Image (cartoon, rainbow, N blue to C red; front, side):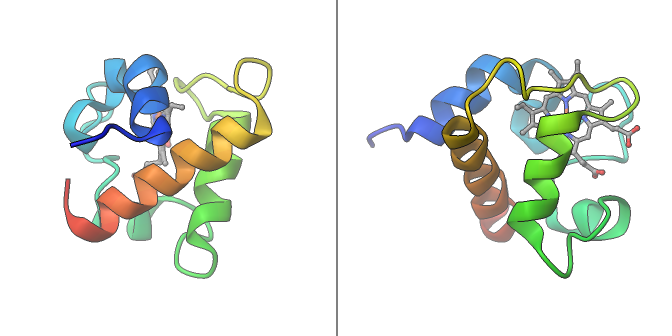
Length: 89
Ligand code: HEM
């Protein structure tokens, strides 16, 4: 299957900590739907925007990506995370 741009951005920037939609540093704060709904602020009201906010600004041990990825790349990786959360990683 063709690999999407979002998948490539995820592999290059996120998979080191979030391989398979997990979290190697804080293991309950995964990218699975239930965890996003529980831990990520505003996920239930505006899922993609909530992921974008986290990627732009980072949080605690997660680095910010707003100087590293373009707005278009951040949107693509956020959409990829959302799609995988919905489908099941
Ligand atoms: C949390 C996405 C890169 C470490 C999260 C959350 C999202 C996310 C959506 C919220 C999860 C939740 O609360 O259940 C991403 C994306 C990345 C990325 C899309 C790449 C652009 C990284 C990297 C690291 C990392 C490289 C490690 C150096 C963490 C940590 C948390 C977290 C520690 C928990 C933060 C806290 O609430 O204290 N990430 N992440 N992330 N991520 Fe990332």
